[in-house]
Image (tube, rainbow over all chains, first blue to last red; front, side, top):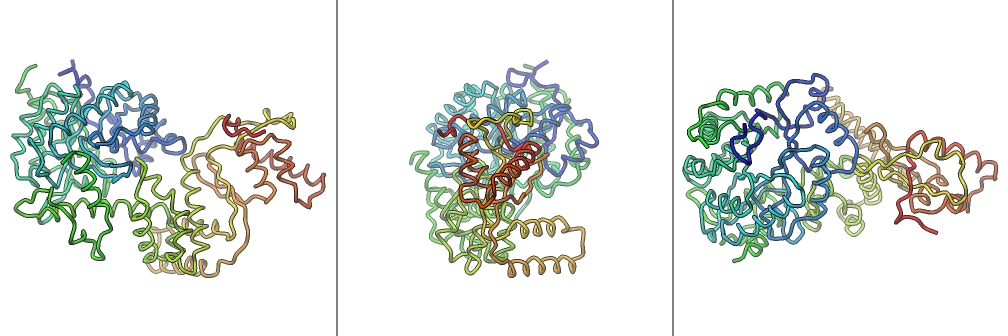
Length: 282
Length: 289
């Protein structure tokens, strides 16, 4: 039974990101995996091997789309070519929901290809929410926005990051892809209590969870997705599950990618927590 | 400050070229960014700036291995930085990052020095390779569609078939670069260095020779197929929407081939194109009278 109206897929279980180094292993060995998350932009092409491989994966597995360049938080309007291609992919994958980041990355038509941090202002919240609504209406699929890791904050901010997240999702009436690792990374970089953030998230809107590893540098923590998940992040994940209930969970591993079995085994560590008794009954 | 204003300022800061030591420019305006107990505002922007530059440089590095072989790593790196400073991404996907490189290099020959002509042709080939890899494949016109061709019959060229007229046989060089890259990890360092020297030597020895090339995709693999000059002209005319009668006249207008030779060539070409699946129904907007 769905835990909330944005979390209609509580039986999705634990997925991993579909990545090129694992294609052959997956196609040859057909491992049992609850679902794969794809980076939408990798398949927003007109033909060739990317789509051929995706079609083979779709024959056997459930696939959920995750985007990296919709840039809901950019002040400029949504890119129509991007939306058109994304809609074609949505029809192809039949993704039950679609996620992208609560960030900006383009200005005046120039793209950074990065997930840049938002100034937490009411003006930014309104612009972002308006774009989320427009994308959802065009794509005709539920949208969840993901909190990003960040390394900079702005003087002009009028609220905390979690207040900004709440402001956007309320105005847009959309779901949340809650990245637990990103909360941890940002808390280290900005000096806030990650549990204050976690406990402020409206559980009724959480559609999906992300977990990942990161890298510690001397003066900051970088969200590199190239390590196993550390214990403090697993603890936060457990707390998230206790608040939200069983939720589709995805391990991200995008750099220095080990074998498929190693990545999958890391993801399956979430089994220990995913059915933890809920603290809140909805 | 509005959202648009802060985004313009931050984009300008992080997309400006890094210094020689890969640091953000010392006079970068970062007053709108908060410091913390470990990092100044400028240092916080530097994290994003380095990430931006490493990402786009890596993308160009991966997409143009042949250009790297032609120029050498150091010159390629200098060219990449200059190109990306002039032509930052205008697309939501990094796939299109090199789309303006050939035109840019035409205007900035100093970045390729003596190898400018070869470098431009390698860029054109590698961009065609990217397009052939994931451009659309429309419905194929098969042998049954080509049985009775009238003069007004029109056919289009598959979007994944890219035609190139080149003055250097850079296709051979690119194939050799691919082989060297495929073998990396499977051979010793000494053998790898030997192969690198062989590729570098081949670049030096590359002599001008006009070739016509179709870069195309079959079974999800990209291939380079040398074609004849007349064949190149005919395919180009069909792609541009000419009816087949006019396209054939255009293709052979300066050809020394006799009528019988032309007929024989046409039979051979159409059979090959049907087998390769190169022809498709014409796009309405491409139809020319």
